[in-house]
Length: 151
Image (cartoon, rainbow, N blue to C red; front, top):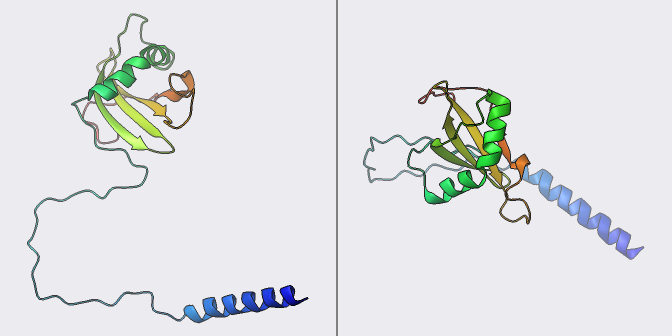
């Protein structure tokens, strides 16, 4: 009986504290400073959660190795999605990364029709037996120009 009463009192006090806090101001007071900050001319884009890094033409050895490890699967999926020949040798032109429950390695691959497509390789570092599997590779059916803003 005593524990039930104690539990009810604690719940009542918690609810009372939460209700009293609703009247608290949510806006922080502004503080005026006398020093002037220098103006910068560089405008940085805000980083979004889940957004990929900017496309980079300088493909690092680590990213090249990942692409080469999945090259057979990438070739097969390019044949299925974009009807490229079996002799087609895919090469990444640009790459980007994206942190989402692991890392997506995004590659911009030039197709024989002088268009580009995005190949995504998903890697979960902390899972064993995840690396090298076919389900980690996705090829977008859309094609793009090299400097397309919609990629």
